[in-house]
Length: 261
Length: 228
Image (cartoon, rainbow over all chains, first blue to last red; front, top):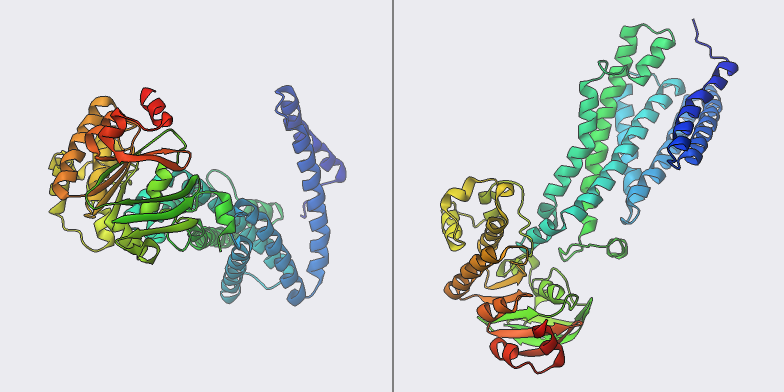
């Protein structure tokens, strides 16, 4: 049976928007505009992507897949760069990281016959990998900046003892990676026990046997886990050195970091 | 030993002065005068935007930066200990240069009047005074020739500050170190220093023997600072 949600049923979803909207109004949270705008924007985006996917799924795989994946990577890189826009070349690092990760993951899927090279399989699964990698890179950048601020004294102490930037920042890198990876490790630990993952739920609702749905979910969960780890590691290890200049001096203001040569 | 020629950086304006070997120099003055900024120029944690700094006749910019920092040790206002044990902290510097030997730990802790049993203590669990002593031992572990101190006792109570001063007095004498220390405490300056540099708004406006400066100030600014 193919699940069908009527347009009237969809309209009832406004109730789910009305609840946080009333809470915001009642407690004067000042979020009403944001909630309304995000709900409308999200709905429009989803419908737009729905129509675009229908169009892409009809295209030849060799055209539709690279086209859509390129768009997804560009949008993800633009979005993630906002978390570290004062860091020189951050956009290019994110872009390169996402391309390498997506190509590696996709190659593994195809090489071991986990996924068929069709837009309807590759695009949604790649979207999950790229989206999660984007979030991991953004979180890692944000966390790293905070760690550099909070550990300013320790960094100065380490440098003054003769440490080079890479050893002085070891603690920062560790803390950043820890923070970026722990939610994923926790999620993987409780997968299926606390919540049924989205993809698996979707497949089961779509009539696929639970065991088959689990196999797909394992492919995507483990792919996401490794790409998130790689993304956080790649961006942290590539960007920490921009907090220092070539004389092993700590750059303490955004302006100094942005203007370094 | 150190020579500053027309050095400007941040709040510092066109500073020229020299520091001789084994001198004990006290940098003091009102907040925002640029004392800590000046201190960080000695070991190249900052570089001047104008002018030159020479160490034994050679521009500090020509020294390999890590080797320079090993020679010019710095103790900060806050201990900023690294996570781990006291030993992890003390051997941090020497390990970078492949010079650590385990028996050094006991000697270094003795220098700062801490029992050798502290070696395996968690650095986070120490008191403020103990942390600052470990920080001092950590800097001394690199066997520096010049010791820079940025208000190392300002966050400590009177008694603990005095104990750290005792340590410093003995250490500087025994190791024949050159010392440059930022302080707000004039008694401390009188006790530990033999020369004073009084700074206001990025400039050195008095330079002389500390005891004479404090008893017979030559500028209104210093006289006011002493009164306050």
